[in-house]
Image (cartoon, rainbow over the protein chains, first blue to last red):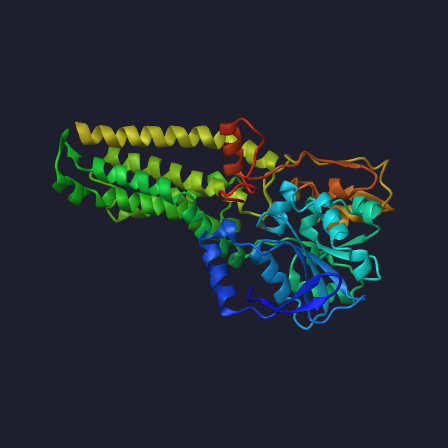
Length: 340
Length: 98
């Protein structure tokens, strides 16, 4: 691979990787953020080196999702270190740890298979803190003798972590979810349901051709623009605007956050005369838009860094029936108008 | 993280202070600073920040912590509901992931 610059010969060859990202890496990262090739963006699991490591060098553990691996090597610039990449099926550290693929057994087997105890003379292995979801430090110690040192959440804090004698301070241990973090995740949200969204969009567009129960293509072209605008706005409300404004929307349930944003944007469309020609039609768009925005915003719980299973279940118990009712009533109202 | 509190009183996190030896592992692995050591014992100080990731439970050598872990992900819960399995974000398949 192009990021391998050299090899160190031990009993086996250890690839030395570059710590400077190239154009290809950046393009790969951008594509991944847009869900292009995201599930096949991998590096081979195994042992790698950065710089010229020796028996005293640190061992950093990573996942074989290339975005994770790139992030680590970029932050190991000017280091001499070993990088042990676990087979996480191309999934990032935190998600893979939740699944157990970034886990105790995989770490133990990689430590043994690559004879790490022969490669270094110390007994420290640095695992990213978010990997702790899948790794049990005391079990790794028992099986291999290695002391797992949980490194900082962000690879950019590695230098400070080492200077602090393998301790992360509270800030380095805490997961944030800042504006840019959230913004970066919105393309995947948009692409996520896009197929279904296009199907809904096309159905509404075609049904727009009906007026007084008779179909004409002219109606589709004249009226079809209303459903298209409303549906696009509600989709963006849930997949982009709610995630970006997340902490500033003053309710806690994600579905409710999306519903509010959907309502506000539908009001805006209403004032721009874009919600149809009569009251029932306007009401139908309020219901449909709020349902779509609420559902797509609720799905952002999976991308967020602070929602719990118990919490999401609790909110869904109320939100999902409500979304179904709003969508059904809204759609039936809208459709009825086309046929009377 | 003050803007990022999710729902209150939902976390299933439990800590048995009797068993705790104050080893600090829970403090080190928690991504939301849920724990604090006082008088050589761990205490849950921010329960509503808990996202049930399970890192503390996994790394407590004394088994003093219990939490029902899982994905806090609506899509995963829907998927689990449809397939009749536990909530699952589908990270090990070739399909989309969390």
